[in-house]
Length: 461
Image 1 (cartoon, one colour):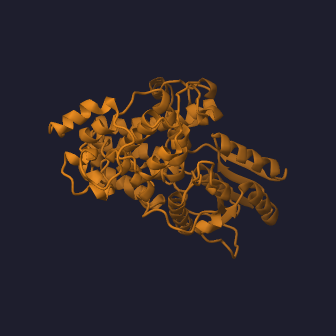
Image 2: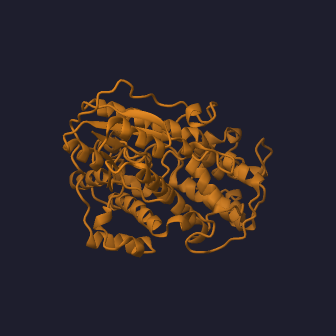
Image 3: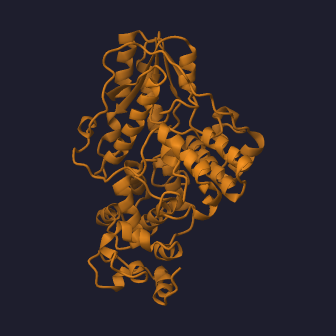
């Protein structure tokens, strides 16, 4: 008897090595997904480590995984609890000989994996596979301790010295253990969250089926990929960017499957800067994954792995304003309100909201990273924490007033900040100049003067 443990990063039947190995064994499988209650506990900052919007998206992915496994003769057992307690009990109950699951790489996940390993009987083998990145960890030209410090060095050397493996074939048939109770998706209360719904709806629907559908839509149905390089910094609408990140984060869409589709697109439709750029973004995700592996727990500390410091004031009142989208800066507030309502935010929004929190509000960047972890349906430990670290210590300041004008954010602001909808295209970018029922900024910074004057002069993009 074998057990296939699907964590938050392997909710798919395509390009899934753990599922392929378990299926090839010829033995009955017990596929299982455990909702780890520790991931939903409230942290010291006053919000859950994983909030309800992420839970909802995860449940969509799990429900779709169960549906897809049923279609190939299987099912998915759903449980709630601590995996280090749940798994050993299942091993004893069903005399499980092997647990197939994916390797972990971040501190908390590695600690959990070690706890599971320590509690398993010697009769049960833990079979770990690597499955989350475009480049397989075994194909990298460096050991983890020597991962380059710059993305350029990583990208160029990986492209020159490594190869991208082909996706594994989708498993077409599995044999599962016959049990009567496969479990139900938990309610928010069952994992420790408030029963009051605190979001509108997830930005996209979760699951492998929707992920593959999105891939086909963005590339082959609409050919939006051709313009990606020039539209990716927008915030309004669905097709300015791929929206693959939620599906990759939950393991619903394989990076190698995306890469293979892009190569097909280049052969059959068009090869240009956009096709290069999309692959570039996926390689960047790899870079952050492997770099986090190199520095481990330092990544989550205020001083980071670069041991730098900023004189943070950590005013909790200002932090609350930022979290709620009530800073008085429309470009920031619109993106934060979108995040709270849908669990998603554009790349441009993330850059501006993080820069504003760290360099204008002088908040500890780890507070912002923790809030994004709580809310983002495409939360990825490497991408989230490494991007925040980069924004705090390694790249230049981003002016949210200038950026709102540069990227023509008026309609996006009107959508998410309804109290400003009556303002014209000039007023809505600098609403503190008007009489309107909207929070006044904590401070109008001198460094914004040029951008403000440009807007006042009617130099609207």
